[in-house]
Length: 253
Image 1 (tube, one colour):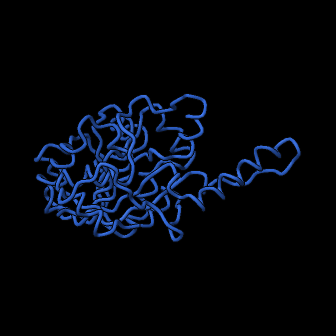
Image 2: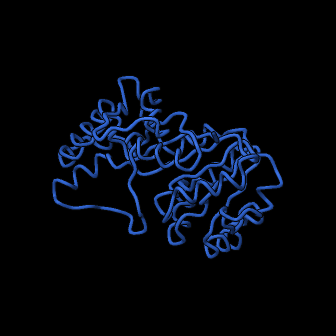
């Protein structure tokens, strides 16, 4: 999905509207499985994976279950460097999972991360990171200033404010959220953050874990969950903008 030329004028501060209506999906919009989309996109490429480690208490289980993204990327990338600011997680990966120097503890806001600046890369992958950052515009601008010549593009994923689960929780007057998150995003507000940082949103897609789930047993005991499952999958095909994740293909201006 791409924004129209008219919407791009608002993103570039060429126009203003206090009630701007933005088309964020249409009948052609697909919903993907997040990890599969990312793995397929970077296959055969030189990639830096930012935020590679995940939360320390979750790493071992994700590796055991085969859901840890960095391991999947490692199987398909031509060259892969994992970067994370969490020193404990990086040490754990090196000590218990033998990742060695292919994962490093570093702050990409620094201009002297030699493992990055000394090479030319295809893609900087930033999955589910921005929502943890206090100032995402400043964060992305520092990446642009320090490493613009090292990457052809960026792939960014963020939680979607319009996630169908959020809507369901609102009906109960509740917000269910990762306690470390600072933000929810929409396609437009993400594009606005990117533009402010000197980056350009080329296109965006949606992903949702529901697409990957199996139907399960059709026993009478599971009839209601099964019906709800079918309803949710049908809803996402009709309303893809209610998916849980936004995937953005981004370039430097």
